[in-house]
Length: 130
Image 1: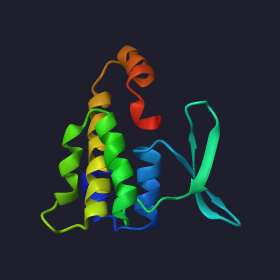
Image 2: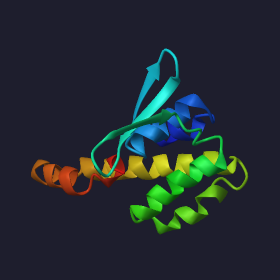
Image 3: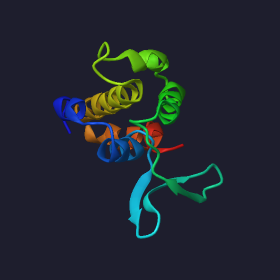
């Protein structure tokens, strides 16, 4: 996904799924009864299921994204809700910047020699863990 595609996404289901998968490292599935469900692995290695959080629509859910990015070393995430100078709602802005950061990390990995990619995948894959 490109920067332009990320910025063009509207708040809602698709953006929420993208954030759940790419930023939070959760697996999203559709259940016949419960609808969109995200699964993550807790600290004890157990699968935990819950409804897809409205990351891009609700500031409380977006703050979970912000906190995850801060834990990963992006202290400037506390300012992301103002991204776009009012063009985006706060929750949407946080989600879009988080996705842009993940995109940038992936671009940086592309320029890394193959033998280093394995190492970085094992050590630096904090975006896909809780």
